[in-house]
Image 1 (cartoon, one colour):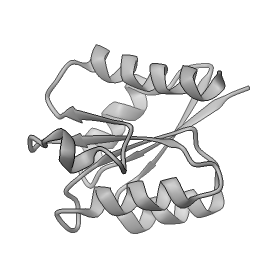
Image 2 (cartoon, one colour; image 1 turned 180 degrees about the horizontal axis):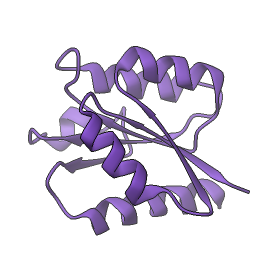
Image 3 (tube, rainbow, N blue to C red; image 1 turned 90 degrees about the vertical axis):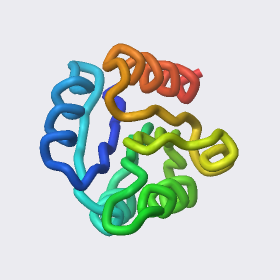
Length: 121
């Protein structure tokens, strides 16, 4: 069974790069460029993981995506990806993981794979 990931970022280069990095035979990657696009995608399709930028059209757009994701039928795991450092208290409770942009690609892949394994268990 193919697992699905939604990547949300307002920078097209980032969504393209993350789609290339995360796509595989077992993983289908969809993208959205805003919180509104992400909400529409979550309303029409089920996802296992959502990787979202925090600051897009508003400073807390990623939080809105996370909240909508957690309230959706599939209740995907959520990873916040941000260029701005965040304290654990700022993301815990609405996301399952936080990674800072510019970090290791291997770490992002490992976090997504770990969340997928946890959901499949």
